[in-house]
Image (tube, rainbow, N blue to C red; front, side, top):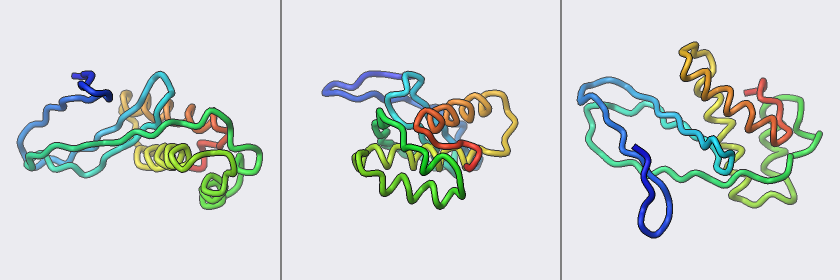
Length: 131
């Protein structure tokens, strides 16, 4: 359940079956304000609270330099982008990691997350097929 916290921010209560299953949580912001993220290898037998920080997406594209080439080249271009803040760079790197962690999954809901992450990277001028 999504909820707004006093003082700002949003959160969600996720219910897990208390057993030794491994979960992966995927997060998207359909308004495209914040970067998505994935949290892998959660153990359903462990009781805990997670705090996840979503970073603001950049409002400008990375440019042609990072639109093609190897994934490592694109990551370097993001890190060295002259007009993106550290937060915006982290946002794009988080989406790259999230997309890479979900590739190869054919479950319809996961495919929706993949499409969202791909659109986020494409909007930033980055070829999502590299991740």
